[in-house]
Length: 489
Image 1 (cartoon, rainbow, N blue to C red):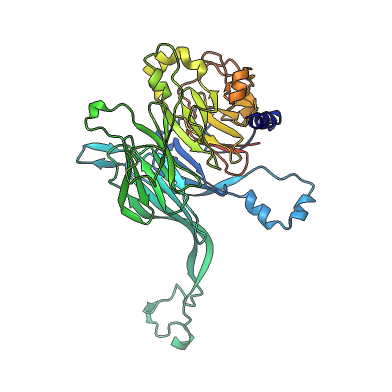
Image 2: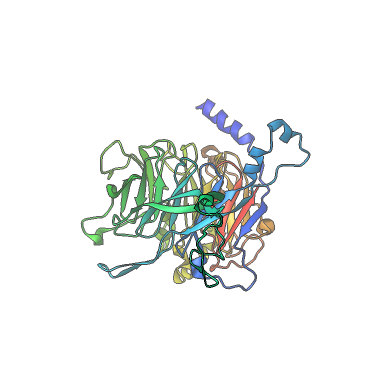
């Protein structure tokens, strides 16, 4: 017991220093007053495992791929010693547009008289093979498996025929010599390869497996399977088989009037192929083990906040709904986002979160207004850094928050998705409490009501829902409308 306490104190005494975030790039930046078309609004962002590629999906069903350029220059510029002797510092991460393709189109379900919009809900990268990129994309009903590979453009050249002369009449005379010099001088055309261009091809379509809207897809660490989740069911797929899936979680009651909660997000464990977690609209997270049974109706662990004392309001359950969960890279910790807070969970400790970070505490007095304009149902995503020391999530007015999640860290910053991200930055001290220090439960955030760190009124129509953290570096990509902003530290 004493040894554990000493270890926590030692870890808390040397937290990593706060990061200084800088603007890196922007794609699709709009000018002041420019109208944003609904189909261009970004709805999904995802880095691949190497961090060398980034994919975005939009409401128009398109997937846009970006590739890192500075990494290629780094690998090809010589030995490490030469790099270390260079007088110039290494540049910040740079990406460039690679290609785009139409992943989904609007459809109509005639049996249910239901329109299926083309909006991309999630994108997940798969393992690369033979120089080709593979990724999964999904809208509300259909998942597609895409292969993107550079193809060299071939052209026909070295033809010795004169285009002005043909085998026929030339100026009224019969051309009997084609080509000039007779048949013996005819050379066959040569096909040459020119510059390569990326080509996307749909390899498989996984459809007709979900009655409700798909909210999550997640790859398994075995590289062979993935899961898809809707409000009531989670299905397990094999990447090679598109016409069959296995239902592994089903929370649908016999009578729909008995329905008390729905599935909001699902994620495979990053290293254990038999474990996955899913969250619910009641604020709980369940960890299940696929080895226990074919239908995992019973969970192996349940993570939920201890019920707070005092009266409950009409909004209590709405704001408790978990909108997103993410495993840390080592799989030990789990990050969750509900409307008000960001929580960090230790999968070995199911008594409660080890840390809670206040994101929208200042909006409590405005819950009635947020309910009236449906903003209270906004689903903000969260992400955690590759080293597990920091986490980030979005907010209104195109703001996003970065928190230090390591023991003893007091880091917290608010940044704006613009060319000057630090314009909204502010630091808030951590409340000192002996109990919280021992249990590593911290509460950080602003207490101002309906304003940001510079006392500016929040704009609820501009919301930063989607963001992703680079798997190996302190670099964040986030979506503000149709613009993709990238920052580094």
